[in-house]
Length: 223
Image 1 (cartoon, rainbow, N blue to C red):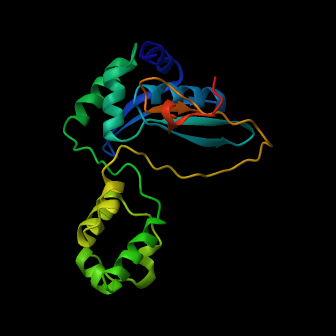
Image 2: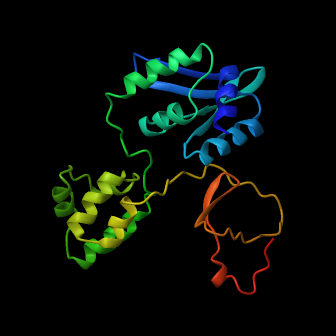
């Protein structure tokens, strides 16, 4: 897979260092959404997280760009996939510049609905919202503080203040929270449970899901 992706990137892929932004640019461009999704699935199997964006082209077909962003994912891409041809030297520049950057682990945000749990915990602790803001070392802005999804580091501070294990667990795991941007009705379809020996998780249509434990799968038909 890595070898295939390396040569695929030599066609319509991009690897370069953006000196103005101080970050690497690694992406693949295609007019095919299906190809974009397939490449994203291959990257995910290598443990590389990527995101697809639509780039309108006016009268022409839209282009899909699959970005590998974040220091950790870019380092992993350059280590496992790398680059072929002229892009090899661009990849070395990116790799060299990434060495001096501390990876930001806040690559996602916990859904803002978690604030409902935090507010309930504040009630249980008889702690005012103003006192909570002071403990968090943030300005008190009334209800505004509950309107935005918290980063893992921010939620970790809240968990420490409230001494809450469940909130702490949300900040220290290998889950990647992603926002649902569209739900399209496709009618009724059969649903299958997946069991894979020796695996806790599997990739299903680009999403990492928990596999069914065979010991708890009695009565479930599976292929």
